[in-house]
Amino acid sequence: MIAGDPVEVVLAAYRVGAFPMADPDSGEITFFSSDPRCILPLDAGGLKVSKSLNRVYRNGKFRVVVNTAFEQVVAACASDRSIDNRSWISSDLAKVYGLLHARGHAHSVEAWLGDALVGGLYGVAIGGAFFGESMFSRPLAGGRDASKVCLIALVNRLRARGFELLDCQYANPHMISLGAVEISAQAYRERLAGALIATRAQLFV
Image (cartoon, rainbow, N blue to C red; front, side, top):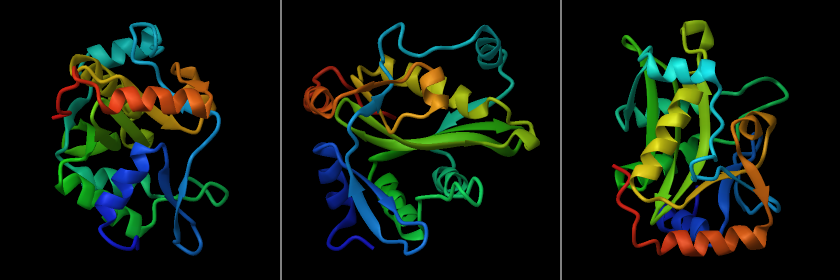
């Protein structure tokens, strides 16, 4: 577990561009800062949405809500993807995010199909910056594209509330296909500094 007040330690790390990850074997929590850094631009052309995905989003197949099942979302994100793709979200780190959520800093976006949680994402909001942490979907339960729908909802929410930065940390083909880009660590720190003091940004909720 993180020494001291884990909420304040983690928030301080985010403010300087670092983020926590736990070793899948030892559970030890370490802070990282990637270079290049992956972000999803929040301007009108940032998020890339295919026609088919836009139809899924607009047809209301999923009920998309915020902060109704935060712990369930984190638990789903913490599941190992495969034997070669194990989760960096340890039980201790999940508890830290639970504390962040309880204090109003961490938030989840959820996709429901009836009474089943079939997709979601979560992250941390500070000022006008949102630090995306992880997402999941359950296609076998009818949740194909559910995490992407949650991402669309997140971007729309951030835009409406005047947020200036959506941090994705590390690039991967999935996020790049959705419009994420890589920038240098220096450029990221400059954007982060501006976002943290953004006067236009409203509360996430």
